[in-house]
Length: 142
Image 1 (tube, rainbow, N blue to C red):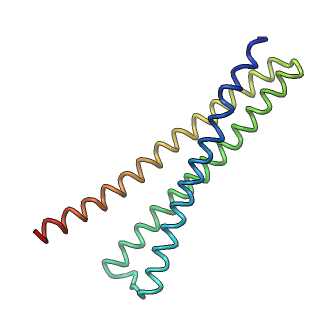
Image 2: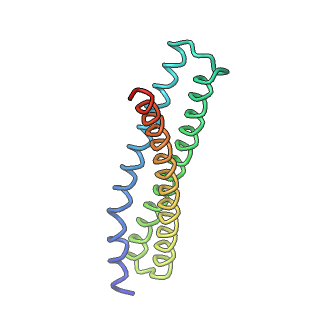
């Protein structure tokens, strides 16, 4: 159990790095929502026509992605705190509590990574959709 204190040190740098990544993704989604919102307002797009429905579908997808990212960030934050508790309880020689806190940190961060993979897949599908649109336009032009 004495060497157990090394394990949380291995997880410790990964969590903040991933949280930075999640924050970047959140900001990117928020910027897209603002851009779409501005386009709808400035161009006075009717949300009932084809183009308007397309914007609304994009906003719904982006809103869901933002919710996922917020959950991912929350789980990662709790995992980081749990990892800190692991170090603290290891420091005051409470190995059983320390081990439990580390297990909680690993599980929470694991769930956050699974949700991250789901969000990345959603993002990739959206990009594929845009690429298909461009390919269709290219076929019509040439």
